[in-house]
Image (cartoon, rainbow, N blue to C red; front, side):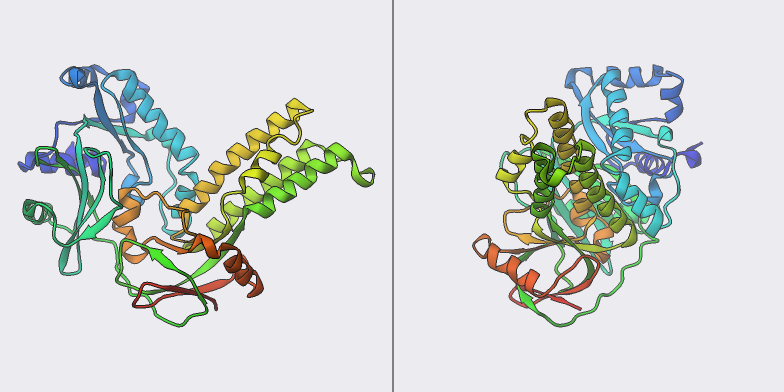
Amino acid sequence: MESMLPEKARLLENLKKGGFNVPDFIYIPASAFHNEDFQAVQAFLGDYAESFKVIARSVHPEEQFFKGGTFDSLETYADLGGIKYARNHMIRSARSSRRLSILRQQKFNNAPEIDLDDMGVIVMPFIEGTSVMAKMVGDHWEFGYCRDSTHKFQSDPYITETPRDRKLLEVSQTIQQHLGFRCEIEYIVSQEGEIYVVQAKDISHVEILEQAESTRSIRLDGVRRIRKRRNYRERTVYVMDNKALYLDIITKCEDIVHRWNGLKPGIQDVLDIIAAYEQALEDFALRHQRFAVLGLCIKAPEELYQVANHYLDDTPEQQRQLSRALSYNLYKTDYFLAEADTIITKDKIRVDLCSHDAYGIDTIRNPMWSIYWNVDRHDRIVKDFIRLGFKTGESIGIDINPEGKPTIYRL
């Protein structure tokens, strides 16, 4: 029976039977949701009703073939309604915010087609503490620290070969020896220092490749990255200029209001501009497995955003359609940016990294780089990129010198 469980549930069950400190958990297959068979779930939740909160982790039968973090886990209420909500959220997220990521993995990584209605859930009590991810890279162990829910002020994610608690290394070595293959292990270290194993993933099939080094062209001011083993990469670039997008939208709105030159465009013409932009993002992401985004303007200037959201106020129904499309466009843009492993833009545009994005196994070959220029140089840097002719679809090189200063150039 255990061999039929999805990997996430099977490995947790294996570790619990092996005597490791795995929190109490219950695996709820999709069939239980389809058949409304919740007796076991209700009994489990009854033990944690006083804590009010549990964490629900996605468990799709094909999840092992996707990158860690592709499907959601979330905190929810310790009742049946909370569990149902969490599962529905996982499925909705996979169809919306994670859709592009899933499509790209199916195209570039041979991930299988999936039926999201097969989504199951693991439920375990919510534990206040620090999230740590461990894995063996080459001949050494590394430990990634991310969210620490016990502190109001938190540091950026970071990687170390020396964990805060020496026991983390000992436990990780013992778990890998017990499972018999190279694995990525997630822990929660409680406020009292107790180490809980909350997930394990087989990474024995993941290769770690070398990357090249080369030369330079436009000098920028800095780079934010967790892994620092490589100082050069080449990427196909998407040049993002949302200021230009909003100017196009406002121009078309002017045509609607003023009927310049006898033209009589309608609201659909404006919506088509936004739809074409979003389709171009998705098409680009599905053509290139790894890519960079050069953000000449990632967030539209506030004044343009306000103009676009109020230009058609005299025709409220049209303005509602436009504002709804612009709001959705912000999410679509975020989904696209989340797929890039290299963001090049002005400082103060920060990438919010979860543990898998920061130091998961997939980041060893392709760590996230956030290259930036100082805000006071923004106008000059943008003019330089335009002058040198950086265009969407071209290849660029990024070289980071020993002082941590990146240089960007066209190949």
